[in-house]
Length: 225
Image 1 (tube, one colour):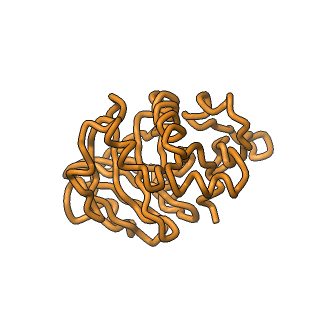
Image 2 (tube, helix red, strand yellow; image 1 turned 90 degrees about the horizontal axis):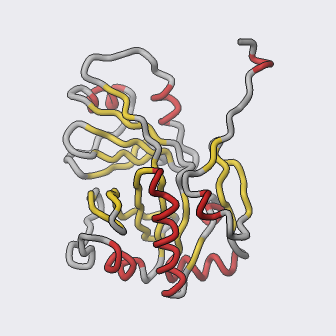
């Protein structure tokens, strides 16, 4: 196929269906149509301080597993978390989650490019298997986050304090989810990943609680600076 006849396929965030009734401003980020603003910057900053819910499903991800997965990633310059169920930062702009002993989720933050480089390698390697990722992903911020988790999470995070590099596999609103604590722009937040098909449901549940507690939806633009 000639380059001139190729078309860019626009994807939509798995959470978008639950956001259509809002007055969100939309933009394309990493080829994904994403809600970048829900209200004025002043309102969203106030929500972030209390309990902000942000859809970051547009961030690029790459999954890999197998007995040689850690070696394969390390050979490509990816930092490997030392222990299972932990995470590390690679090259400043990429999160690397070790989901057990031999499965990894790599996620580029804003400005990261590791996932594209990994995906470009198409040669099959023994004991290294790509894991398709279609996650719905969220940032939860603010002083009321642990109160949200106390209502929705099967694991009481107020009793089990997450250390700086812990990755927790748990249930959030009855949905299997991955949770960790991260610092973004000096602010402590929590990250949540789940199967993309449950994204709209989880968004609606978390947003309902956020609004009850004085927070609300926060667009991606708040984290792109």
